[in-house]
Image 1 (cartoon, rainbow, N blue to C red):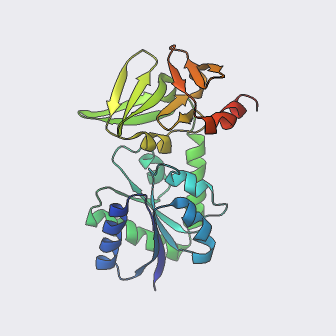
Image 2: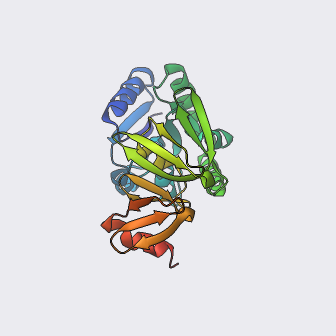
Image 3: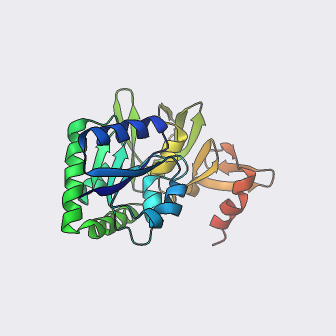
Length: 247
């Protein structure tokens, strides 16, 4: 039996590597199409009706979880593709949903594919997907911890202790309530894809702010935070931003 499969990842090299690994080792996996744009995948999903999706978590415009939440009734099996340190690995594990970590190791890929095929046969996919979405929604909030990879390990920080994220040429500077900051090697698109959109808002392509730390909005397009920092508000984001405070 062939398993109709699509791949979704914004990185073309990652897509090519995964497709090559699947073609070489898994004859039962039929890759129908690969997507760099999750919006396009959403538009074509009903037509393709995949049984299995390999889904990158950290995509700049739409995270893998955002993608999943856009689908009313996700009946396909999912294998998440993730980077080391993604906070959601535990949530995925608890729901018995498969994942592989970049760079993908053949043994991990084999385990994930075999488990996915078993779930398809058992018809347990819908239940697992619902459970995952419920878990992710319940974990959003100020007390949620973010895992921040640094050179000598990991930093665990609660959302409420983070004032903002600032993009710096492919890196991200994270500013904390105690006045300190750290520079992360992950870009700002990664952080936007993993933080709660109920707690953080991307006011500009280079700035994500904790909504609870906003104290003032200036008509000239600046936002002031509790720590007296001011950050620009993109013109195209103004209506969405102001709507947050008028709901």
